[in-house]
Image 1 (cartoon, rainbow, N blue to C red):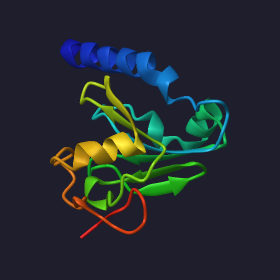
Image 2 (cartoon, rainbow, N blue to C red):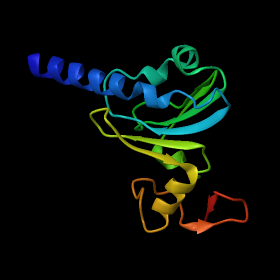
Image 3 (tube, rainbow, N blue to C red):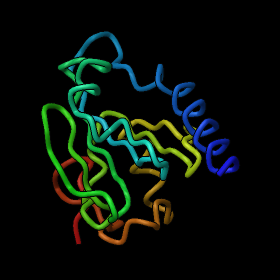
Length: 138
């Protein structure tokens, strides 16, 4: 039990340390992708908190493992890895299992990582560009 509590405390501290990076730039509308941490406490399941914390202009799509239900509320949408079909986002945040922010990319940078085989954990992403900029298709 003590080990589980220490892990929860560590994960919460890691996530809180990363939180300022999630705030929108220059108070403008953003459509962001967050590849979520695998922690017990998921603040992304509370869309009201996310909207209040990050602002009403930020739309956040969060990729969580299949054990979490898909949902959409206010400015936050929860999807599963198989649902991720595009990297056409303003910013892409990648978290480790322990809730450390390990990558922050523009949509174009994320696309460039995908080209050589990055993001292989998402089987529905393909490496062929469509006519629409930033979109991935079969």
